[in-house]
Length: 455
Image 1 (tube, one colour):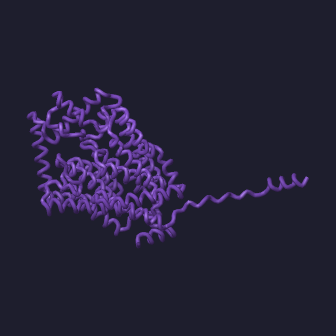
Image 2 (cartoon, rainbow, N blue to C red):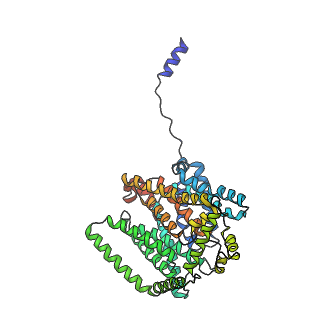
Image 3 (cartoon, rainbow, N blue to C red):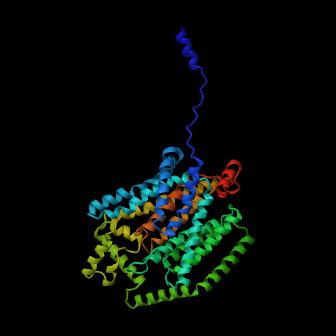
């Protein structure tokens, strides 16, 4: 009887919820993460060996965050397609190396993507996204200033920053143009963000102007295309949100700025226009030994390789070897024998990986694109902050356009930039921040953000 009474009393006892295990991160870790992430973009402009310190610091922070913060670990599940796309690149590369008897160094990009996939966890715990955006604009300011200094102060026709030059001469300039363009576009978006306080918008606007000047000084046509298309889309979207009077003011300001920059960089614009006309004229006369003509020859060669190896391609990083074989057989002109890439990432994937290669590359772009579009729609409908998914869309759009005229995965710098920004914005996108908190900063969150900004 006593046992039955105890069981009845136990059954009727109120059930209290078990408090969840605390997964908060120490404020110092959050501060270290945000300042490290804000400084990291500068390593793409000034690629000194000291950047290893940032690499190791972010790796240590990411390991700590993944061990102690459940929400950071869950973010990888919330962006499952992106996680798989970036995480499987290393095994995909190793399988390709094994199938085509390639060199192990071809797995280098896969290792870098895994690293940035790991440190993306740091974006889940940063206490201030404004500081990170200021770091992006600082990179635009530094890149633009360096490019203008090399062009005006040192008299370098095609500034290449600290990327150096190779035997082909202009590879460093093109990659420097890509990096400068990405940071300039992000600074432009931040400058037009009406939710930011005026002092932040002034900083982003100054950085965007410096970055734009740098892009014009570098005079690389591929980055110009991305700057024109993506930058135009950003301005158009922001203009649609203005009333008629402010839209008119913005149009006049944009026109005046365009005329001013055209006057300041007339020689660069005129020189690139003349060189383009000269190349097209030479091609019409049958001379393909030009920048545009050489690309067309390599694109045709890439399609030929794909048709010969439609499923698996010729092997990662083996386009140059097969191109030289085509030259020896008289199937391609001799002047392209010095090249090792197609100067088109889509055709590179098609030629070196076949149908599987192009499908994987499109997944690498499409998975984050889908995530950013979905999060942008959701957060806009919920009144949340849309800066992270919008920034991610800008990065994907820029690199997708870069890939039409040059390779983006042939250098560690541009590969790392793509992975760092795409994965960072992806993690921030799945960690939603209400618009009221990001724009007006209420109560405790406001105090935390002010503490960080004042440091």
